Image (cartoon, rainbow, N blue to C red; front, side, top):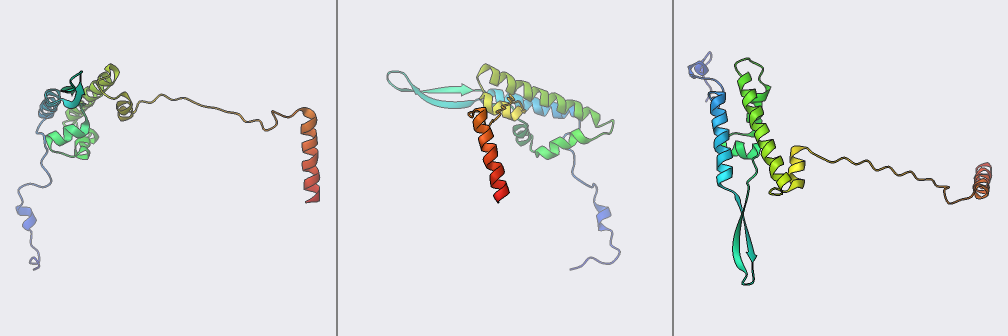
Length: 165
């Protein structure tokens, strides 16, 4: 079924595009703080067995803050969340400030957790883009085991082989 020619039903739509998830940067920060509080109140629980009688022990571990976890908590995708960083309008600049604050809070919590041993330092270092760079250089000298006379003989043999070949 085709729409009639010249129809403009699309103009009847009261709004175009998706509504912003947050009406203001302040609401975005409040939602992030709710997520941080939820993470703190809901640690990851390790079940372990200890002692002579092998009793079950529940060991709480801090839940790391993540951008992905925040986005799941507030109901948006990470790409949608990051679009607020790309906006250059003066009104939207306040969102950039809040997102920077959120990212710094997440970075600090992960780094502090890894440094104190509560979070896996290797995983957190990779997640934060930290790495210890070492440069390995190894020079190979093919003739290091040969004395000068042996080197001359080898070069002479190679020259003869090239002339014959």
